Structure formats: C-alpha cells, structure tokens
Length: 436
Image (cartoon, rainbow, N blue to C red; front, side):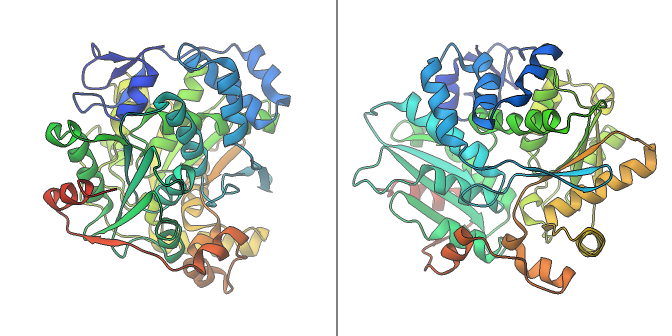
C-alpha cells in the first residue's frame, strides 16, 4: 500500500521509504492512499485474540506489501509484551489503561512498534540513522527506551529535544539516564519550538545530504499506525451493543488520529472527544471553523501543551478538508488546570481510582459531553500515563503520593545527562553534526 503527502496527493511512497523519511519531501505528513475496510463480522471474530495477534491482523492490510507476514507477526509479539486492561470506574465509564509498558505511558505502543519497523526497513545501513524527536514529556522517554542500543557502533542514534523546565522530573530522568546511542537536549523554549527545530532539520538539504535523518514523533506514520490498535481492542472488550464514546486526551492529535483511522476501518464508535487543556486550537476549530494556532501555554498536563498540533493536517485530509464532516464524529473541549485537579480529587474520593492529569482532562470532557448530549453510549477514556509520572500534581489533588511502579523508581535513582541548547536551528545543526 502506498502513502501520500497531505500537502500534495501526487507524492507517493512505499511504507519502507515513508517510515525512514519521517516527513514527505514537501514537508507534508504521510497517510495511506486508502483505509482498508474491515466488515463488522470480521471485527467480531477478532474479539478473542490476544493483543499482539489483534495488532498483527489490523496492521497487515497496511503493511502486507512491505513486511513479510512472519516478520510482522514477530514484530507485534515483541513490541506488545504488556497488559492493556479496560477498567470500569463507574456505571458507564471505562478507563483504557495504556501505561503498563516500560515507560508507563501510551507512547510505548507507538515507539516500540516503530523501532522494530525501523530496524526491519533499515537493514544493514551504509551510514548510521539519526532519529530526531521533539517531546513535551512522554514521547521522548518512550522513543529513548524503544531505540536504546548499547552496541559500540549502533546503526540508529536518537536525539531528543525537550523544553527546559516543562517536563516532570521522572520524564526528564527517563530521557537523560540511558546514554549510549541516546542524546537528550534541553531546549530553551517550548514544545512547539522543539517541534519546529526538528522539522527544520528534516527539511535541511545540506544536513540530510550528509546525514541520514528521520523523525520519531507522531508525524511519522510508523508511530501513528499502532495507536489505532488499542481503540479496536477497547471496543471489542466492552462487548457493548452500543458503539462507545472515546474521550482522548489530546495535544499533537496523533492519538486521536489513530482512533479515527480505526473508525474508518469499521471499528464501532459513536463519537470522539478531543479533550484538550487550555492549549485548544483544535476544539476552537471544530467550534468556529477557523484554525488559529498559538504559542503553547504551560499546564499541569504538560504532554498536551501543544499550540500548533501537527496531526491537524492528517485529520483535515481524512475528512476531505470539511469541518462539517469532521463535526459529525468529533467534538472538542477545553479543560483548565483547576478543573483538572478537581476531577482527580473527585474521581478518587468517589471511585478510589487515581487519575493522572491528562486522563483527568479526558474524564471531565466525557462527563461534560454527556451533560450536553444526554448520550447513554458507554464511554472509554484513554489513560495516557501512570499517575506516578506526575506525583506532585496528583498528591496535591488526593492528599497522598500515588504508588510508584518499579520502572519509574529505577529511573529516579539514576543520574541524568543532558545538553543545554539554545532555541536556534544553527545551534541544533552544530550539535547534530557532532553526534558520534
């Protein structure tokens, strides 16, 4: 199956080319030329499959021309070695827990699948490949973990850009304590600045003529595709007569886009909610029809502090550039820090369940959608990170620290190593040229 650029439909590449490129040559994002349709009866047959087998069945229609069947099966089995539970916390609300991977965040799904796909397509490279990633928190740690390699001459190197003072301590530790083929840069700016620097590097013909570069953000289609798998898993696990409402904590909109691709394949869903913090250009677009990106603003749900989400372009393309068509499936909401803290507190005291701040945004957005529509469809909120990754915020809300998983405790006990970086492309280019 070929992929096209969101900027120019005539640009077509195979998956092997698109994954290693990251961005299309014109700076656009890749999308499949068609979304395979899975009949409802076939979806029902997938319900009893273990998650890795479900992932394989969903990935094969997209990748069959580029990845041998046995390779893809093994890839899914190696990538998805952790649980994906769906927990009911009230009569009609379920939490899809996506934080049981090695870095305790949903980004593990995309990063682990993508890293293995990279290695398959890369083979034995003539020159090392540098993976550039901008992160507002969890992407960096997930990509660092997935691509980590302590070989003396690793074929893939990772350069992570994160905004100074705008990630949690444990997030920073997870990015800065691996070393070897992973280098972390602390940028004096915002996530949007980091993302702009990555895009500039990928589009720099002088640099890319001398170094092999690609991206590991959700701008890379290999990160995006596996985000569709867990939506289908949740819909099938509910065994509900009614298609669920998915409330999606949203920043760069990659997670939401993965769900929409699953829905276009035939996955039952009654509605999607783009649950944002005060960085909410997409909900405003859905309301007014005007897309007005803005500089990102710092919040307690920092992984969603994105003022100009890249995957807006993919959503636009999937809906034929028609906001009216998009509104039939997606609505948006904007949640403040105060409302987020109150939701963490209320949910804990009413149900005993501990939310991280991003998941809390999703829970409140679902509740408000139900109030506005009186919908009785079952609701699924995507829990994007373990609450212990945001222990200070959670303890403020519930009066005690959340339980610390072993992998987070291990990261906190290590010394980190980061390189300060000006918010300047020449400064980044100089650093990239010295990576060994």
